[in-house]
Length: 331
View 1 (tube, rainbow, N blue to C red):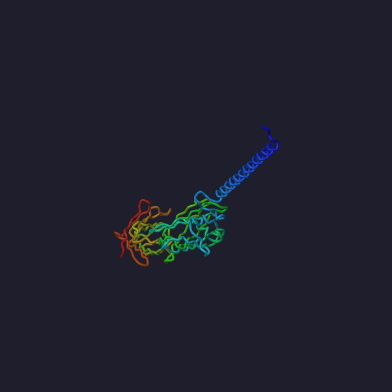
View 2: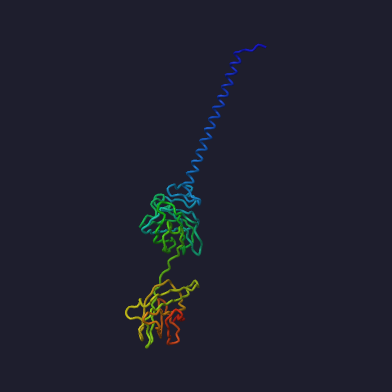
């Protein structure tokens, strides 16, 4: 059978076109796959750089995902809506001292009625958190529809220690409820930086003013330093103490002179019903074996009066081993 050279040429040209087309398709698919891989790797890198392992988001890259974790921005400034049904509103005031912070700050509130979920508070303050917690500034966060735990008696503040200046000198936190009342908290140290990043604060209790009256015996006052510890039973049933060091310094004029009544004022947390009073004489160098006789001891506040039950007269000697314990009874 005779072969037609023209047909062979046409067949070869068609085969070459098919191969070139397949090669072009393969190159296109390969480039597309490479682009997808590069995009995925780049996105993953950026995501890791801007999020920590707990899902907290660095303030400069806040997005909708971060807001969904902790709350929903309100149209009003410095406000977050927690969306709690039958919730209440809280205003949280942060007073910063000489050192501000640009770390992420998380707040959790506790009371006898429950606990709130941790909230990254700075992301809702200022412009996306960039102006929060500046030195010598005050920030107020409005929490709307937060879980109703009443007034908190304890809060926990956590810093992630990120940023150029993580250490924070927080002077005061005030929590105000839309149902009335407020709780005040005073940190005892800085937060973050060279200090631990977590601190637990307990509600500041109202102070009570007490006046202590003591009458010395006719023959025996004292020049020693008088240290006194007063113990009371608050409503929670846990014995509470107030230590008064060198009470002589609290008395104007001559303290604890024989035949005279001395008195001084001190403030303390509410000690409840006063139960015990302990007296220790710290001897001065010139009077190492001093002693003191008392004939009457009374403590008053604006509501009650307590009197020591004494086998009169009561003689107290110097020395740590000679601590005298007196029972107190309400008059």
